[in-house]
Length: 184
Image (cartoon, rainbow, N blue to C red; front, side, top):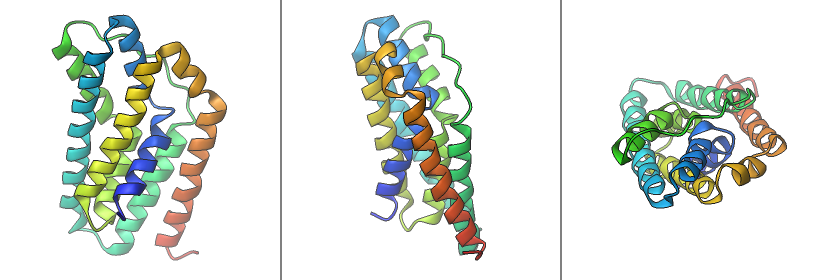
């Protein structure tokens, strides 16, 4: 549980203002098929969560405990600061379901939550639980976005909500980084 819940919460907070959720909403509107977008999203988030968990578990052995804590703090800071920049609206995916899956997977690998999941997998006791938590959080956000549609999703993820989520990531990341450096 030390890795599952933080990864889930971080994916929710970062996902509110990130492109994969917005892309899912736009694709669901453009295709008129929620099912294909949900399947592509679940596959993409599961793949990204597994890759982040694997990468985190591989790098964990090479890092000292304070370095793992600093990695987590910097990942949270990067996720929060990265969310402050305005996001350009993504274009709907062209092609069939296979093209949709590839586009969603590519978008999820550039997701801010994937980096936090990677850092939590390196820092926590169970990389698998970190991967599951990050994937589950990403799935929840993107499926909700796809269900709502692009217009309603932009109202939910309005700038004030996104700012609050990113501020929380920045605050927790700063505390984690300063704690890893033994400054607090």
